[in-house]
Image (tube, rainbow over all chains, first blue to last red; front, top):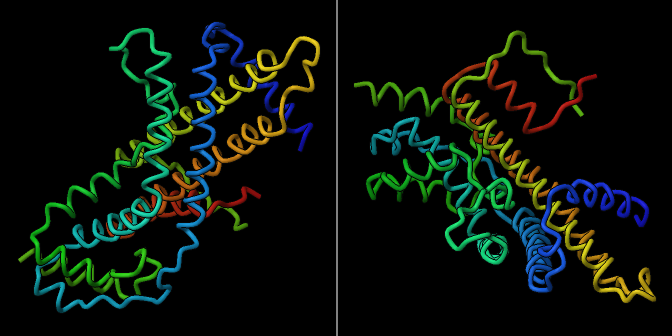
Length: 184
Length: 114
């Protein structure tokens, strides 16, 4: 590991050596804040690992199509619920370490930015590693705009699982039926 | 690892392109984080050490912390890409599009070109 680490670090140091403020590299506070980023990366990954191996039900779900039809759930809403509830379950699990990482990156930016008003670049600061996908954001918006009963129904169906199509036996049938219901 | 399924003349639609852009942005951010950490090692090597003992004052803790953190970046990135790919694959299952399904399935599960 020693040689591999040295080689990797050497490459990075060389890449970094081009056009970076020397003073910033040597400042103890900056060093400390980077250590905080390192620690929070490790902590984030550990909690992701723990969350993934968290026991959630592996049972295959059969959707109660009649109830979904009665509640006039659309296929789009069903799909949004699957994505949103999966992400929500995971996010709740990793949230504190995720916030820690975000905080550490923002702290370094606050300290090294040329002015207090300097905007943070998600790519250059590393913050972008945490940006959510459009699919996730869309799913969140759709689900959180559902009428109370619909949202409750969908939550109850997926309670205790991290939903995905692979865990739903009759999603195709449900989607067809719900599509024809919503067209009327 | 499964062999990649060939998709002829595949053009990702607007939704897929957006997701690919987000993935690209995350990869850039991951590189930036690696540089940020690498910078700290630079400090460890040259400024924590005394001039007489340049090689030996770098503590094991320093190396372990940086190396360990560096190793987490690709894992974090990989998980986020898998999560995006799964959501996209599901979207194209609901809104059936065979080529996009194959594309995102390959990204999610990984495949070999041979």
